[in-house]
Length: 167
Image 1 (cartoon, rainbow, N blue to C red):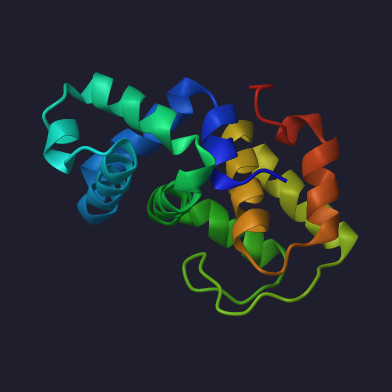
Image 2: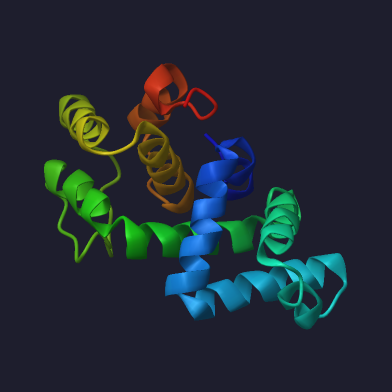
């Protein structure tokens, strides 16, 4: 199971840049929080990063966000991107598992789910969405939620369609 900083390190550079660009354009508070976390880790003021050309800033931020000490910032960035850009995918997954949700957000997850339902839900996502995005979501879902379903972990480890770097 990959943590958030590992997810950013293993996903394609195009997807990592998409996450930062989407957040920059659509979720200014999340983007500013990410800039602040990276600036603090680099021991610079946020304005230093903000004045960089965006391509250089993104590259610098993504390099920093792959470090373990910035896992919380990476998690917040990925979570904001998923909830704002991919809410329909989150809803599709949770609905397929018959888990009550509000636009893909859940208050209480069950301690486990049936193997057949989980496999069917994953197949639904893979048929409808880019595999790399599905992989990031499922890894983040399993890492960020206290439930930590063993059968999802097994799927993530064994299904090559869900392994980052294969896309």
